Image 1 (cartoon, helix red, strand yellow):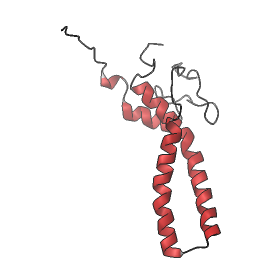
Image 2 (tube, helix red, strand yellow):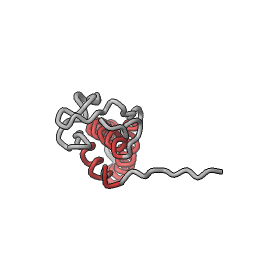
Image 3 (tube, one colour):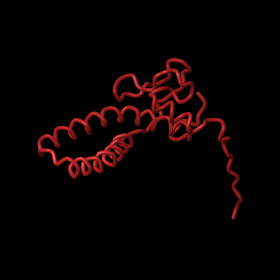
Image 4 (cartoon, one colour):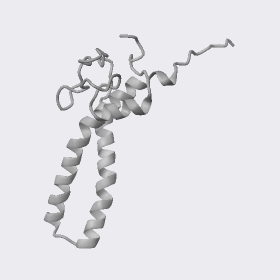
Length: 132
């Protein structure tokens, strides 16, 4: 057996929580100023301010999964509470919660996509470890 030494990347080099916060705001995880997204869900190739490359991101279905997870866990208990406490008409209940789920999903989806890209950048995943 041979001993392999792994070079550890310093953790302070790319702070996780700062990157996630910047990504959730749809800003560049590196500088916090440039935009990660140039339309609703399209990721920029590079940051317009610091020129950090985002070509290597692999967000795919992660943001959609997280959006469904969060919206479901927020709205399902709220639906039960409203139904038990107020007993509204079924169409009223459906209308209110359909609009609520749709609005919350549309709000969270691009923010979670920015956060997923920022997470990948902070953890040096999918080619983000290569210098620009």
